[in-house]
Amino acid sequence: MYRKILITTDGSAVSQHTACAGVKFAQQMGAEVLALFVAPDYQYPVYVEIIPPSYPSEEEYIAQMRRMGEEYMGKIMRSCAGAGLKHACMTAFSDAAALKIVDVAEQEGCDLIFMGSHGRSGWGQLLLGSVTNKVLSHTTKPVLVHRLISEPAPA
Image (cartoon, rainbow, N blue to C red; front, side, top):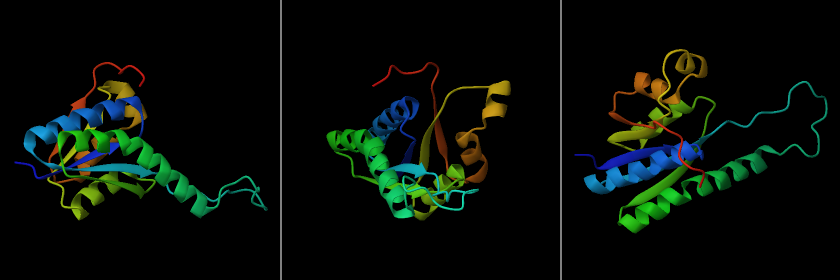
């Protein structure tokens, strides 16, 4: 049914828990996995005349975010390898994570987007916003939302 599944992560315990569920789902489907970490765009310091020496350059920032992405997606890649699934990972950059997720799913030919939700409702959801809700409202692809009822134990 699904040949290629996009699994998103932000490195948090919640997203790692969701990613593990996504790999299990992909294994049941016999699908390929594309893991995605969306890092914020580089921000130039504002309101300063001289950039402090400790402030990272754009190249240093991009390299650091790629290292973080590889670390965050490492568990997903190991799970896929252990399950015998074809897999790849990607770090993308955008301040609009939901739109980037939708774009990557489209560009990479993913059949399904697998992502998590904290299960917040009402004011909590309204005030915090939700990448998942934004993805749902901007994509025409199927989205499987893994709802987390309670916080997972720290890894």
